[in-house]
Each structure stands twice: as C-alpha cells, then as structure tokens.
Amino acid sequence: MSAQPPGGLPRPRLYDTLTRETPALEPMDGRTFRFYCCGPTVYGPAHIGNFRTFVMQDVFRRVLEVSGIPTRHVRNITDVDDKTIRQSQTEGKTLDAFCQEWTEKFQRDAAALHLLPPHVEAGAVSHLPDQIALIGRLMADGHAYQGGDGSVYFRIGSFPAYGALSRLQERTLTTHSTQADDEYDRDSAADFALWKAHRPEDGANFWPSPWGNGRPGWHVECSAMAMKHLGESFDLHGGGMDLIFPHHENEIAQSEAATGKPFARHWFHVAHLMVEGRKMSKSLGNLHTLEDVLDHGFSAEELRYVLLAGHYRQPLNFTWDALPAARKFLGRLRILRERLGAPGPTPDHQPLHGVFTALADDLNTPAALGQLSIATKEINAWLESDAPSPDARAAVAASFADVLRMFGFLLPDPSPLETPAAVTALAEERWQARQNRDWAAADRLRAQLEEAGWRMRDGRDSYTLAPLDNPAP
RNA sequence: GGCGGGGUAGCCAAGUGGUAAGGCCGGGCUCUGCAAAAGCCCCAUGCGCCGGUUCGAUUCCGGCCCCCGCCUCCA
Image (cartoon, rainbow, N blue to C red; front, top):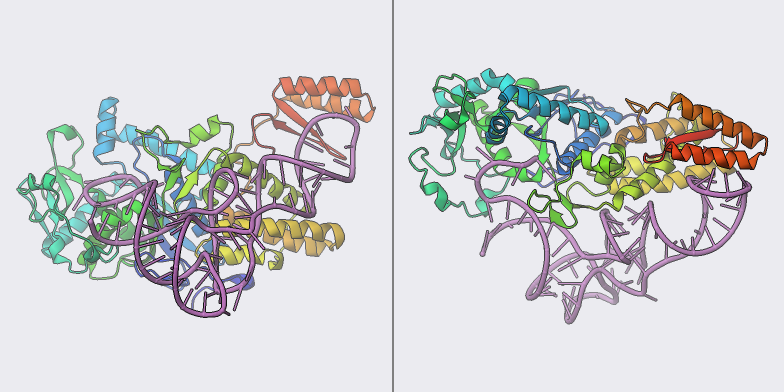
C-alpha cells in the first residue's frame, strides 16, 4: 500500500504542531509525500534565519527521499505585499522587476546552500486567478464578506474550529485598541483580509476582481497555491514558528471553510535562529545574510552545517565561532569519503545506523551529527585494521553517500573555482623540486603560491591546492 | 498579563529515573625536510537556585531567579 523505506532504514517520524504528537510519516495517497512550505517575501536578501527554516525543510525532504518516500514539494514566493510594494516604489522600479531581482537572488543563495529546488516554486501574482476563485467560493458560501472599505474579509465566526493550531482557546482573544479605529471595515477585529481594496499608496499595483480593483491578502496565496499544486488535502505544511499564528491558522480556516475537507495533515514548524542570544533584527544590527557569511571567508556549506547543529524545535544561537568548527568537521567527512572510494550498488547501512535513526527520530540533526562523528571514527579504524574487501568498502561508501545526501553535505560544487594555469605551473614546479629534495626551491615556490593566494598541501603521491581564503576542496 | 521555549564544560549542542552524545577550542602523541592535513588519546562527580518524591534525579513534582519567542500580516 505505502512506500516502505529500503534497506531497513527506520521510517521517519516528525513532531506535529497540531496534535503535539510525533507520528511516523506516510504519504496519504500511498505513493508521494506532498508538502508545502511558506517561502520568502522578496523585498531584499533572505537572512540566515530564513535559511535555517529552508535548510531544515530541505533535510526533511532529503530524509524522506533517501528513505524511499518520493516527495512533491511546493513553495511560494511572496511578491505582493506592503513591503514589496513600498520598497519597489522607493527604488523606482515596477513591482514585477523588483521582485524578479530578489527572487533570483534568493534562488542563487538557495542553490549555494544546496537546497533542492521545489517541484513547484512560484510567485503569488502568477496565481491570482486561483486566489480569486478561492475567495469567490468563500463569498458564495457566506464565509467571507465585503467590508465598508471595499476589502473582502474572512469571517472568523463562520469557522468554529478556528484556533486549533495555535490553541487560541487557551489564550485571550484580544482586540487591540488600535483596531478599534478600523471597525468600520470589519465585522470583527479578528477577521482577516482575503482581498485588499486598492489604496492610493499602492500605485499601479492592483488587479481587477469581482470585488473591485485591489490585491490579494497574504494568507490566501498559500491556500490557493497549496491546493492548486497539491490538492485540497495534502500531507504536510511547514514554515517558521512565527507563522503558526495567524498565518497558518488563517490558511486552515479559509481552506477548510472553502472545501469542507482537512487541509494539511501535519504541521512542521522551525524555531528561530538567534544571533548572540538575541532575535535577529535590523535595529540590533545583527541580521546576517549568506553574503555576510561569505564575506567572513566561510562557505555556504559551512553555514549549512551550523544551521543543522541544533534541533529544529529549539532556538539556535548563531555565533561566528561555529563556522570554523563546521569547516573542521566537514573536512573530516571529506577525507573519509576519499578513503572510502567510489560507492557500490548496494549500501551497507550498518556502520551508519545511528545516523539514520537520529534523523528519523523527529529530524534530530544534532544527534545525527554526533552519530556521524562516532561512525567516522569507527569506519576509519575499520579501514585501517580490518583491510576490508573492495565490495565491503564500496557498500559502506554507498551508505556514507546516502548520509551526505541527507545532510546535503559535500555535494558536487555547481561552480568549482578554476585554478589559474600559472598557479598550477608553480605547483608542478614545486612538486618536482620537492621530488629532487631541493628544499630551498620548494620553500621559495611555496611562498610564491601563498602570495598568489593558494595553499599547497603535500601528500604522499600527490598534492592539493586550495585558495587560502576558502575551505579546502 | 496570556500562551510557549529555554538555562548542560571556554564556545555551540544532544540526551536520560541509574550515575553526562558529539563538534570546536585546549593539552598530549603518531606521521612529517619545511608547512599543513589527517589519525589516536585526554579534557563537566557536573547539567540555573532551593526544597520534595525515590534505593537513586541533571532527568519527575513544587517554589524561586534569569533569558528568549509569540499574542494579527516577522522564517
């Protein structure tokens, strides 16, 4: 009936925000695990906190796929909201051109971080008809109404289950004083906008709809896109912890009110990244981007390691000290992969069993990295003392490759740095000098290489070259 | 105020009712022309504070002190 993990790998389990349980994951259609993740708002570069969420979602997907469960992954790009409109106007660009620019930047960063591209990734503006259709259904069934300002609102009162995800019934449903001023447009302060009537400050950024010119509300884009590409019910919906309320709560309300069917079966929320113990914010000046990490001389892959070094349900404290640790650890993995050699057709997962178990256990990446370190030592000892057969070695290499694939580490670099011919020539010359035991010449050539920005490492039978300000290849 | 998450070695960070994973740093060793890298070993009688339950608590319960997040559009 349902896909079973191959090779005796444990079936992944994941904590569900809605039920507070940690069920084993199975595709509800018995074949493909369909999930939706809220994407970035493209009004500037994504920061490393955004990427924590996307990296966790990426590992989640990779674990499923290596476990033999095919996935279908959909992500939206928020390209119409107050921030994109305001910023594009400030820069004197059309909304479309402005968002295109930042979308491409996001996708370049994502690729550098080895994030698998979603099967569908699209902007909200490209799905306007779907959103309008969804709002139309809600209007027809009386779940929505047009307010005094011309905007269309979802009527919270028409969806009794409202608040289940964020446990609103255990909270105080507040009516903030600031919203008393807006009572003319909404029946209830908790009602949220599905369609926002055009305002002068939106400029040319409006579209026609049965309710007049305007633009879609934020929540409706996710519901419309998720249901269009995954069906009215699907397996999982994810995002940052801060989206639980109100964003995901509102998505559930409007989706289930429209369809009468359960929306997402499971909810996956990633805790925030902190910087030096505080929330990242522009005002604190601690909001870092991938660009900043690269400027400090570290790689995207090293950042990826840092983001995986904490459990996704706990806030993770980012410090710059973590990057060198990442470099060291990844270097050890790289060496072990070289020692193991080419993967064979049939993996032997036994030596890495602890890693698979930890990842399947609510995506416990820090525990999995700990297990990986232990396994690394054991495999090193095994290679040294047991003189394993080529087949045995290739089988472990295949399992090791699976583990690397799940973490997204040491994947083929899409844009390897070219070594200049002059540098290669110097290195060759030095290698010859060294073979001739001409130490003076060898030292002089090493100095020249370092001046050129390259480090030469001597091995037994060969050497390696790496840029001084980059991690070792 | 309401809801929730935390306080574990210099830093980061798992975990458990039975005596503390892992990484980095640090120390030692092997290897090594030099330089590195790599490999091996060591490194918290202690898990915010005070009580309680228990044969036994860092892990359960109560109280207290800090820190952090959410509470209408922030991943």
